[in-house]
Each structure stands twice: as structure tokens, then as C-alpha cells.
Length: 278
Ligand SMILES: [Zn+2]
Image (tube, rainbow, N blue to C red):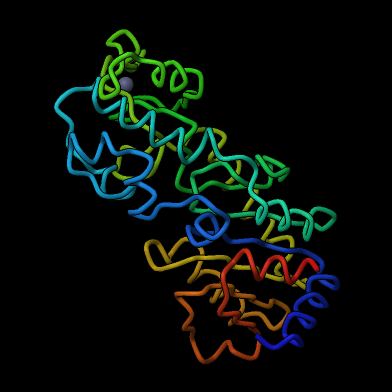
């Protein structure tokens, strides 16, 4: 990537009235949360042996026979992705770039890294939920419950593949199973906090739609392009004062029409963030 492009991007960010960050899975994998098959095999040989699992993504759809086994699996998944990772450098550097700006974050990531790395929780909209929260599996009420303490207890269960039965959570209202608060079906709970952040997000866009607004899109692919990718393109396409910076080493293509108001960096997110900062 041409050094002048990074110079231009720094200038855009310095001169911006506001910065909107849109972050997808590519940011966290680049920052160091390793979802590869090799990593899964190394970290969870017992799960490979017992269930034939191959990686963290497909294993999350496994149909367990018992709640004790299901929660044992999820405790490991949540610990690996959410509890044990330290604040990751790429997120910390991204915070350094925007911390003194009027910024807002929308993300499909559910690993909590933005808050771990200093971002204001009133300015981070986790659209697809969080590994750190639980909900009623049939969404009978719209309250979320922190699961970190429970997960830590589950990880201490004597049987590696089953949590102790008294640790299996049930809905305090209807008695159904509990579920991680990540969007996978129509029962996904959007609680008061989710709605408040959705409002904050809309307000941020309305407040800045006629100002010098810079959109920084990081590692967003095509799993759910309707949440970040397409709306960002639309904003840049319809407003001359809005510039889109897309950073992605895989999903790079874009509508021809917005090329004059967009910078596309085909680069690993962590490397690009570091070059923008330094
Ligand atoms: Zn319920």
C-alpha cells in the first residue's frame, strides 16, 4: 500500500468532525483471537475426540444431548473468546486514534474487546449481542444476565465434558433453558441497553450527516453485510461530506460509484491500524 494513502487517511481523520467505526470478525481475528482449526485442535483436543469438532465456529452449532454438556462446551467457548483474551493491541491502537474525537462504534463482534480497550460503553453498539450475557432461550422477557461468574464456576467442574448439574441455568421467569445472547434465531433478546445504543447510533449519524464524517470499516465481510457494509457504502455514496475508509484483506470489492469518496486498503486490520497510528 502506497505510503501516501496512509498520509491522506491520517489527514482525513485529523480533520474529521466525527468518526464512525464499523467492525467485523476480520478485526478480532487479525488482532489475535485465533479461530483456526489448528488452534482449536491444540486447545480443545478433548472436544475433537468426544464430538469430532473441528473449529470454534461450526462447533457452536453442535447438537448436545444434555444441558450439562452444552454448557460445558459454551463455558470453554466463552472463556476462549471473551474472558481470557487480554485487551488486544489492535483495539488499543484504534482507541488511541479516535479517543479524543467525537466517535461511535457499531460492531457485529461479540467478544467485548472495544470495552476492554477503553472505548466508552455508551458509544459501542454490539448489534449481535455479547458472549458475556445470557438470555431466556425463548425470549420470554427482555432482560439479560451477566454470565462471567457462572462460566468461571463451570470451568472448574470435575468432568471436562459436563458441568455440575446445579450450575445449569434456567430462565427465572418461565423455567426454559437459558442461551448466550448472540443473534442466531428470532428469540434474540434486544434489552433496554441494546435499544438505548441503537438510539445513540442513529442520533450520532443524524448529528453528523452534514458534517465531515469519516467511516472506518474494519474486517467486515459478507455474513451480515446489511448491518455495516451496505449502510456505510450508502452513506458515502449519498453524501459528498462523508468518506469511507475500508480496511479488509479479504472482502475488498466495492461499488464503482463511491470510489471518489472512499479509500480501500487491502491489508490486515492490525497492520493498517498500526500504520495509521504511527
Ligand atoms: Zn423465559
